[in-house]
Image (cartoon, rainbow, N blue to C red; front, side):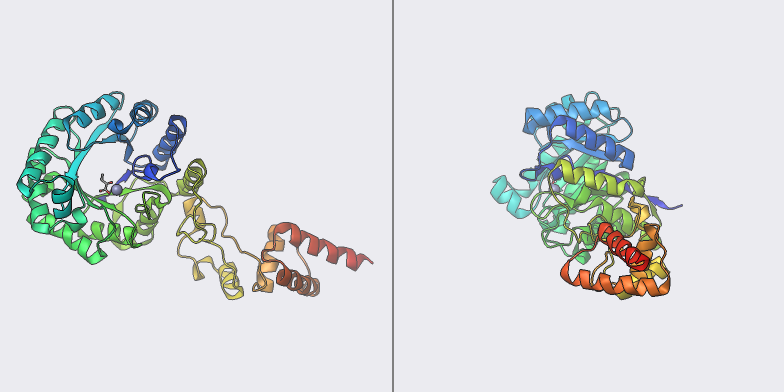
Length: 387
Ligand code: KIV
Ligand code: ZN
């Protein structure tokens, strides 16, 4: 039987920390409902102690969404955990996500502490959260730069204390995929009791490796991934949900199942981009404006004859209704004919040649040729013929 991978979406927590992208509660509920329809397993709805707005959003999302688990973030601090539990009171399935920095630099500069004391604080936080909920996730902040032997001791201690999920964040986006895979594998092979918990990835994109690291983590044995829509998140962002979902769908060798309905990917991408006022870069994988747009004549001809020639994903699988053949001066007759046909116009070869000549002249002057231009060219040709 294939393995199940849990999708933990943190668009509304880590994603929403982007300056200028804050959502109000009504907008967060709209995104949460779309995430539920998309099929995510866990929604990280906020960090309730951080502000009354976040607290209230976790309450309202818990009321509005019933299928996914609702998760609230805390530091390894009792007051944070009390407030998180209070905010989760209406959630049908609740999770508290608590944790602490485990790299030497976090231990020394952030906590002015030592390794043993950090393990004690981690264990105490998990035990405290466990009094409230069964489902407790522990994060080892900056695990990416934490020495593996020590990380294994932390993970073993928190699982013994009751953690059901252990999150291994590459907080600074520093790890190489091979390093991150080895880290997860090391935990799988060396932590006593590891099979009582799910290992989670949480990767940042500072060096452009968030998705590669997440996939490497899955190969190493992680069975939960923490992701955001469009890869939004602080600095260079987090792992993009849509990229992981489509990699797993396209690469059958993984034999891993998620609950994601990939046809809902494009609509939610547009929703998040417009509500957060955060444009998606045109060449962004899966959801960028140009992700399925072919402009060179050779590619257009290939796609028209057989889509798979240049496309590894069917755009309809992510909720885009057409692969766009962008008409430019580099497009061939086949692309023009294809577009005319889509607009309901079939031309004889000779007429098509004439329209194509006009089209090339226009395309030299104008960057993108739209449907109105095409109609105008075809119409002009029709009226010329009448004379
Ligand atoms: O990047 C990170 O380490 C985090 C944790 C708080 C989970 O977002
Ligand atoms: Zn993060």
